[in-house]
Each structure stands twice: as structure tokens, then as C-alpha cells.
Amino acid sequence: MRAPLHPSARRATAALLTLAAVGLAACGGATRTDTQPAVATGPTGARSAPVPDLAFPVLATKNTTRVASADAVITAAAVARAVYPGGDTVAAPQAVALADRRDWRGALAGAVLMAPPVRAPLLLTDNGEVPAVTAAALDALAPTGLGGPTGAQAIRLGTAASAPGLRGRAVPGNDAATLAANIDQLRSQLAGRPSPSVVVVSADAPSYAMAAAAWAAKSGDPVLFVTRGGVPDPTRQAIALHGRPRIYVLGPATVVAPAVVRQLQALGTVSRIGAPSAAATAVAFARYADGRFGWGVIDPGHGLVVASPTRPADAGAAAPLSASGSYGPLLLTDPKGGLPRAVRDYLLDIRPGYSSDPVRGVYNRAWIVGDARAVTPGAQASIDGLLEIAPVSNRPPQSP
Image (tube, rainbow, N blue to C red; front, side):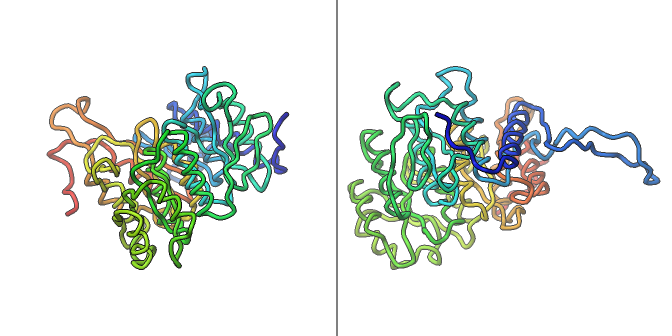
């Protein structure tokens, strides 16, 4: 039985065209959804022959590839298809995770299911329905089932719609803390043990929480929620099941108050990763390392993902990009889509260099998540330049 399609045919058509554009961009070509070619003008302003628009550098540059969507539903589908391009059962996921597009917290917590052993990308549903682009992605992904052909193919998180035609497993939760705790319990069951570390974020500050999704997808460390008022009981119980784990609080004291941290200290060893802004906090997380916890990306040769702090659902949707391919942390633009100073300085610090032959060097590469309003073309151009390998003697001075 086919999943019920979203009522907006126009959105579905645009979504499918966007998916095609992303795929072509990743393969070295690109397309666009309009039919009007760019028109060149001569020195006097007279119109000359139309110039074909190849959609570069909007969808791809030499060091970046953009998932050019203004809709998290489309972003999730495009990312899932980029990570699992299909072609045979080896390239198919065991399962997919489904979250509601309005539930950024559920999507954020659900990113942990992309970690081994589940490796489930996240797709988004919409108010009890399955959008056409999500249905198309489900068909293309053809999940094989957890543990074999009789296992669950779709893991439904919270209020997400079910996927008719696929064997499902529901993870209940009427609030963010309960749902995150239940997702953590499922992942621990499938992995055979709880993780030694957990990441705690504020349920009230989405931009500061976003970077946790990428790490959860890579590591299997769950994302659990606190509020301004304290540590909810489901979060306490979830942490207790990890047996006094290392607890990493993401965000400065203005986001997760010292009083909340003191409550967490009764449950395990607490460390804070934070900076004054959401973008600077994401950079701090990208640099951070504590034993086996943390990206520790302080040198060249890495993948990166860049998204807008105004689109928190994109964090969960894009998380599979951080847990596959060139693996790497999530960085954030400023709210207007520009490149913050903290990110620019960080990219300068990890910029690749070579002394004699660039072919022998290492390289950085970035996925850009969102349309031109989420990450401006100017920001993408700056990121591309800062990722470029450069002769060591000509490299600009690094930030202190």
C-alpha cells in the first residue's frame, strides 16, 4: 500500500527536481528548475545571445556541494539519497528513522540512529502524512530490515507518520525529554550496551543544540534534553542507565544554567563545551577532544557540514553527512546566512597547505545545507576559498 501523499503537488514536484539537482551537482554537473537561461549584456548594455546557466557556483564549487533546499523535508530526502545512492542491497540501509518536520528536537535526538550498528538516515513526515518526496526516498532507499528481512524497516519517532508498506517500530514520547530517552534506550538495545558518554543540550535553545546531531550520528552518543528549570525525570533516568557516564553539556552558561549543571553532576562527570554564540559553540565542539569523545578537528584533511542556525530541523536531516563519506562536524552561519568570524578563523586554522606538490597534500571539503537564504552564495564562496589547499609560503597568517 502506498503511503498517503502530501496534498501539495507543487511542493512535491519542486522537491523531486531539487533532489535531481543535488545528485547532478555531486556528480560534477548541475541543473536548475527554471527554464530561463541567463542573458549576457555587452559593454553598452545591449542584450547578446543567452548564456546557459550551469548552476555553478550555487550548487557546487570545487570544494563544496550544496543541498539547495529551503525545506527540511527535502533536505532529509536529498541527504539520505546522497548517503545511500542505491543500486544494490549492499548500498541500502537496514532501516530509516521518521520524525515530524515540526519536531526539531525529535529529529535532533533521532540522529543517533545513523550511528553503528543501525545506520538509519532520517526522513521527515508532515503532520501525520508522508510527503511525496519522503515517499519517493523510501522507495529508492528500500530498507532491508533491522537484523534481517523480518526486522523493522522504519523507526517512527514520536508523532511522525507511519510508512505504510514498510515494517515499522514506534518510539513513543509526548515530550522532547521522554522521546530522546526512548530513542537512547532503543539505540543501546541495538548496540548491545549503552554508550560511555552522553551529550546534553537545551530544549529551549535550538541553535546551540544543533551541532550535537552530527556528533550523535557519528559516535552513537545520545542527545538528551534539559530545560531552563532543570533536568527532566526522563533525562535523569536515561543518564542513570549509562552508569555515571561522561556528560558533555553543549552551550554556555546563558543557555544551560550552572544550577542545571550542578544537578547533572549528581549523575556523572560533567564537562561544558560552550561559547558566546551558537556559531562559536559549534566551532568549539568541532575543536574539542576528550579521550575518545569529540571531533578534535584542529588540522587539515576533514569533511565539514555548514547549515543555518535558523533552521534547527536541518541538523537532524543533514546528520548522515557527518557520519559517512568524509565525516565531519556541523558548523553554523550567522542568522542571515553569512560567515561568522569564529567560523572564518577556524577554517583558516585548518586550511590545508603544501610545500611542493598539491597532489600529495590533504584536503578539506564541505557540504552546504540549505538554499541561498540559509547560506548565502557569498558565504559559500568564502568557505570554498578557505578550504582550498594553498602553498605554505603563500598562506595567509592564521588567527591567534
